[in-house]
Image 1 (cartoon, rainbow, N blue to C red):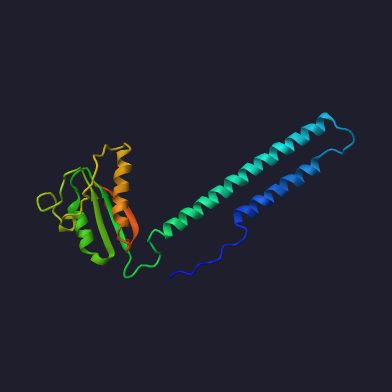
Image 2: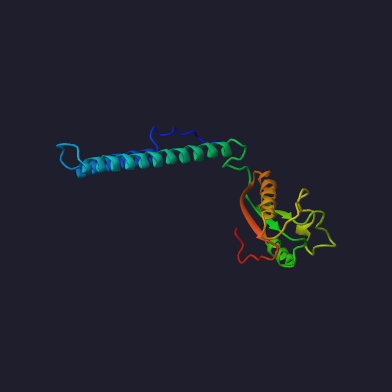
Length: 194
């Protein structure tokens, strides 16, 4: 269990924003001409100060909104069941995005053969209906690893993003998967990451 820390009253973005507002206001006051009677120059400075203050205010509000959204998404992610501490060995999820078969499956076979099975997971998105078995791949590491709900992918189109989402969703079902590697069907690994 991780320890809940109390959040500071002021976040770094709010302190930065406040100091920016004070700096702009002080700078504008120093540049104000001496007041005697309202002139065009004084109206110009007041207008400029108003515009700058409003701009800074908009930036501050934008920073605060971004900060609150990132905090809420981080808390939603941590409360969704994925914890930072994993029982057992954390795994690397290899997410293969393939047209149909994996032409370099024999090279990947040598790669996975030298790794411990408990350190990795394999997920493959290929064209719908394609099955990885003895007739379609030379490596038993890929048998039955294809996603059941795959989509037809047009290379270079938005359907690739849909396929990547399916791969990532499948890999996220296993809480031991802590690292994710998205790989094209014709890609080779130069080093073993563990």
